[in-house]
Length: 378
Image (cartoon, rainbow, N blue to C red):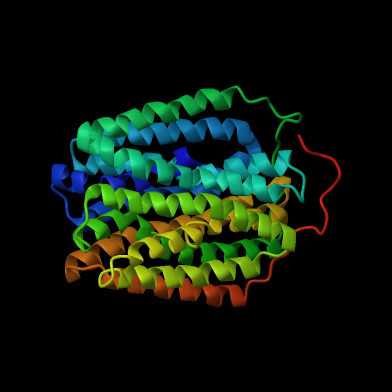
């Protein structure tokens, strides 16, 4: 999951270097992130069906190869247009990452034991944020942003080799059954919620620039703010999933996440006046918008079951990556037009509050079981 999602995070961390080197505006920088995420959104639905047909192991190998290709292409792109192509290529890994990993968990881990595993899996995204926030600024300043992305590509490619060595499933995957109308409706509502939280959470891509340009701090401080957000979300994703599975409900946790995210965005906006709020806001953003996926993925697996986990995940991630994807270009334009980040934070707060409204009409087809099966783990 770190490999699948790291490219746009890396763009955010080395944004100042990319903007200077390529001579692009903040709107164009936002477009580079948007292309990655929208490519993932467009690919998600196909990726979900592909995963159900081909199996999680084969899909995971492809995730690493696509992610590595996106980093290589970005590192060598001399022009902005080619950077967009590389960003879109890496976006295919975004679209395939969650269907592939959800398929693996749903088929190998029995109901009642998936919460922590899902949280650990989803924390991989934030491990990438944390490590990237600490290492990428150092690499960009010492080696240059292009060599730094090339080194990351090599490390990610090693994951494809490791995945290929995983044991094959006991039964070969076959053509999946179609989703029921009730399950489709539930997944679409969850996709809408995820899209709104993703829209607001996309502010994380601009957090380093906000720290540097508005708060007047260094590139290293911007990277540390991202790292703080990331390490908080590593813990939060595991805890949220564990709580959701133990209570056998998902809606209350998702509502709490959206509410805390709105508070986090408000505090980050206020950090312009009181700099210490930056760290409080970064922690709360990691606790909320950056962590919703663990509960969302767990809900998807329980509602869809092992046979349809890939397809259902694809529907949810069309929404999430769509919201996450359109936001950077909108935010970049508002920053260029207003000369500040206030409108960006305001739009994020509005998106989080709308996500709460969506939850008011979301009724899951199924909740988590009240007891874990005694056997079936592999």
